[in-house]
Image 1 (cartoon, helix red, strand yellow):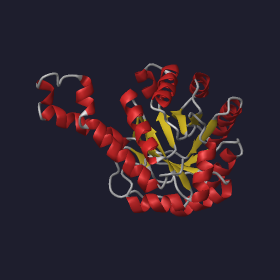
Image 2 (spheres, one colour):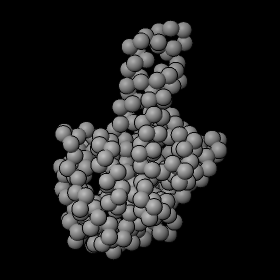
Image 3 (tube, one colour):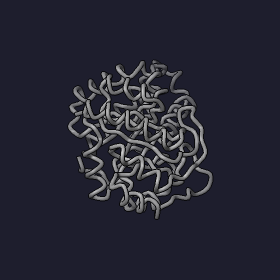
Length: 287
């Protein structure tokens, strides 16, 4: 069932595990995520960027697709449908109106004073619809969905200010990046502990792909209750398609059928990555 993410993340923070946010890009993506978490009895957050929403047809299309999959696949675990990096108030409102149950308002591109004001507007609108809200302070580096930025570490003061808006969980930039890492990430574990205790909020780790397992485990112990994974799943998908084409399977019989092109290797690869992450995050049987 579709729920907001507030309670699942409060539980994760208390019990020291993390809920995965897996970004989706099409029906196959969503289907394999939902089937995997149902098997593992894990809660899940489905992340959708504005770009991915446009690709799939729009916020209403995505909501309809996810609600249909939950019903047809008989999904029983908690599922939150979440806007990833909503950079305007209007984007967040449009997704909420379409039935999304969680949104991230990313005002990190503005001065913290404006970020606080705009985040509060989103929070007030979201609460009217029982929708959870994530905010970001500092800025996560790297590139996601065409948006590129450098790492800008969040300060404790920024975290305290944004927490006063009534948000439910906080993305405080502390060294992670979107996309591939160059060398080993340098994460601020001491700051994670400090910020989590000061705000009493579950923290969100963006750029969860490519971070060594030992660092993920330490981050969870330090207050990270939601970890976003995108790049590794995308690579698993494209690697599967590449293998299928290189083996010339598309030239044999009806091998050109897109269901076979996508479903032969890509789905298997993606499921393996998703299951591995959920196992690492400790959310199996936490539904």
